[in-house]
Structures are given as structure tokens and as C-alpha cells.
Image (cartoon, rainbow, N blue to C red; front, side):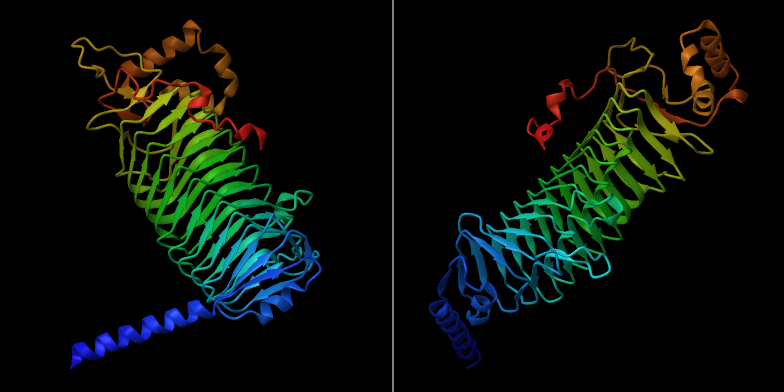
Length: 427
């Protein structure tokens, strides 16, 4: 009897789905027609094909439907409020130019604003331009934002702009393949968990990513470049950050602040002021990263300890590690890292240096306080000071120590094209 009831219920659900599918219609919206009226008249599940044209409206989508642009029609909010506001689940918006939101930071004006309950919304292959916030996404689950180009109000000062994509209190978001620039922060992520951020280009903004209090997320194959800061992860845990590229940022490439229980692997961090900025970080694994040609390779401070740092290449950084701490920090305890300024030797030819690598000595500390000393680094007096610091432990300062420095790097192709997208210079 119970099995029969289950079969009956399944059959009823299938019939309901078939009925709804049969009811779904494709409605063509022509230039000059009222787009809001077309949405109002549509049945749940309908597809509105919006033909190429200019539609001035502050659009409310309050039912499940698909809004599909044909030949890139433009929806303009007229510089007032939100251009498109979504309050219903299962909405798809694709192929539109969405522009000209209002400019109120207090009201969080956005090109597309996904209100609480707009679960499973898909926004794909749209251009969102001259909006305060590109997308504001709040208290929703399983949204997918893919293949969009997002630019902000470029004539505004950075502090007056909104963010490219703002995620607040979300679950299961997928942010994939978007190109975001000239906003305050390209991605701002707050209290949002179990998300995937993959294949995005985040550039010419304050932060490529400003990210707080969010757990169990994957960052993969993203490019953050020519921002003030690249990828900033703060007060988070259980992250996987892999195969990303952060370069040309005027402050840091990747910031790890108050991060725990995470894996940071196989990233390229190149030509930033500070490659990694690591502050108050514990139980994190950093492995296989290429840290190359930064002014400071790693800035390490605030009790960042109990981390596993193995198999990384530190190459050509003006200052490999700037360490602020009360005692030595051991990296590479198992298999070591490569340091391009290592001056030791490998007598037995096993590929591992015979003497430990020490990142900072007394001379390094003096140059931090008195930068003009760098003019004398090659002088006999400064070299003698280094030797004295090595011979007299009382003069030694705490530093990062790698007991098994590798003699050869894991990354051999260090040409700029190795990490830089050839198209990125044109953005």
C-alpha cells in the first residue's frame, strides 16, 4: 500500500511538471513595448525574448521566468534605483546590457538586485555597466553568475563606487568566468559559504576580492591584477585557494588575515608590492606557490605559526621575507622550499642545501629601519656586519628558517607570459 502511494505521488509530480512545461510560452518583446508589462503578463516559467533595442525601466521580476536578450538589447534604469530587481526564485537573465542604476550607497542601488528568496537565479552573458553595484545578492541559495562583464561608475571616486558583485549571507553560489573592473571591490563576499569562485578576472579596482567571515569555499583559476590589493581573505577558515594568479597589485597579491584550516596551493604571486601578506594565520598549508619578483615576497607577522610551508619557489623578490616575530619560524621542515638568494652548497648532490636558509639577519632589519643602507649592501663593511651577526648569536634576530632549502625551483618558465593573460593588458 505504501509503495503504491509513493508511485502515485511520483506520477502526480511528473504530470504537474509536464503540465507546467506545456503551459510555458515564449513571448517576444519588441522595441517600444513595455518590458514591465510583458513581465507582468507572463506566466511562471515563460521565456521572454527581448529583441535588440533600448528599454528604459526599473524592472521587477516577481515570478520564475527567463529574460533572454536577442542581439544584446539594453535595459536602462535611468540613473534611479535598481535597474532590475528579482524577488522570485528560478529566474534566468541572459544576454542583456543592464546599465544606469541609481547612485545611492545607502539604498545599495544595483544593476541587478537579487532579494532574499531569489534562490537559484542565473545571470549569464550580460554586460552590467555604469551601475553602482553590478549585482547585489542577499540571502539566497544556489545562484549562478557566469560569463558577465561588469564595470562600475568609472567617473566616481573609488570610495563612492559600489562593488562589482556583492554576496551577503548566501549559500552555494557559483561565480564563474566574469570580468570585473573599475568598481570599489570586484568581489565583496560576506558571510557566504560553500561557494565556488572560478575563472574570474578582477582588475583595476581597490581589491580584486574583499572577503570576510565565509567558510568552505573554493577559489580557483582567478586572475587578480592591477588593483590596490589582489585577493584578500580575512577571518575565514576551510578555504581552498589554488591555481590563481595575482600580479601587478600596488599593495599585496594575496592577503591571508586571521585564516585557519585552509590550503593555499599552486598560485602565482608576481610583481606586487607584497606577494603574500600573512597575519594571524594558523594551521594553513602553503605549497607549490610561485612567489616571484615582488618587492617583498612574504610579509609575515602577528603570531602566524603552526603552518605547513613546503615546495614553494621564492624567486627574485627584492626582499624574500619580512618577518616580525619573537622566535624563529620553521618552514620547509619536510621537503623544503626554493630560495633564489640561497648562498649555501650541496656537497652530496641530493638537491637539498647542506646548511639552513635564514630569511632575515641583522642587516635586513637595519635596512627596514634605514632604507638608505641598501646603497651599501655590496660594501665590505655591510658584508662584515652580516658575518658578525652569524658568528655571534647574541646579535642574531628571529627569522624564517628553512632547514632543507631546495637547490632547484619547481617552476622553470619564469617569462611574464607564464602567469599573465595576454588579453589582460588590453582591459
